[in-house]
Image (cartoon, rainbow, N blue to C red; front, top):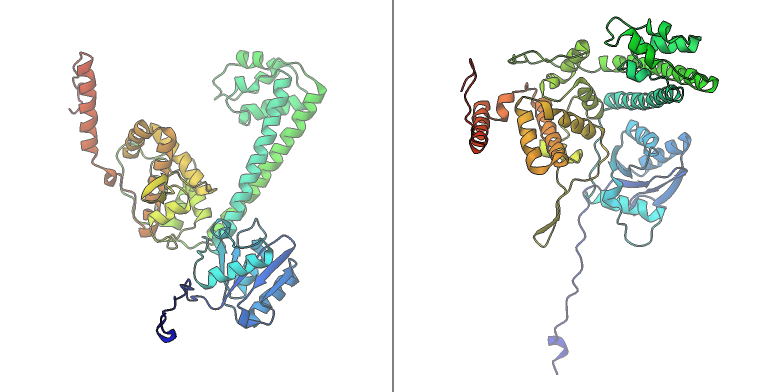
Length: 451
């Protein structure tokens, strides 16, 4: 038997606790009627408290955090409940860390509001939480109005569908006679129908001279079964559509006034492109966007003025908060979300992210299918290899990287950097010659063409 003094004792292996990087951190669990707040245990006799959601309660919460010498606060992005408290704390000088709820969902132990706020406070104190991106206050104001305008536009489209439904129930096929029922000819005919005109020949005379259909063709499409209940629905739906159009016009004016307050940046000279210049339906707005970004983003194939407006409202004119183009694409969910375990990749699909800018870039990527530029050739090549869905995501990712670099470095778009156009043309010509040879033909250049 070993002597007691020489007996070896086992050492207890305890998990090392990470050092505190944010000792003045607090955590808040948000709710619709009550907020739970946790501060370090040594800062107050009762380190966990709850407050109501009224404005005076939020001010009292901020005063208590000041009393506890708190400098930074972490909270989850829960619906819209975080916005009033976030703004009050930010105005009081706190550094607010808005956290994605997905990053802190694994709370050990039983689930309760008290443990949630304590878990948030602990993770934030040891520096394990990353703040979600939130643009400056001026950009947030533009973003709110842009999203409000989008909701108005969707509601207006619903009323327009009701107009179309009322016409279909009366078998008045106005949409077959004109391309757009909200155009000059379509609105003139709808107003005449609501005013009491039922003669299709008289309604056809209201056509604009630019309309491709003749009066006789339009008159045949306007012979319908007029019913009072459908006419009543038609009148109210058209009035509702026009009312929302007026609201959208007021919203556009407010957005323009907010955009005028943004800082203008020196615009770099845009290099001349070969061929016809890119046509835009709103040149003044395009020039204004160039002044805000300091570069012409619409020079990129597929990027429209609406895409630039979405970029401005969702991100702003500064991308310094994104360390690289990869971080910017990851924020939008346009890159693979690799799941690697044991050295093997089990999943590599993109994350499901609700991002308006990512949606706008995907729509821009779809328009590259008919583009004759380098991006169009690249998109069609990727589409033939990976399919349409993967090609759209890859093209949106490439557009995001291009726009990030243009805004970051204020450099104009250079299509030549995407590849050698002469080499791409030579490869395409060689491919066509091989295909023609397999079919027993020989390609010869046309007169005046460069071989």
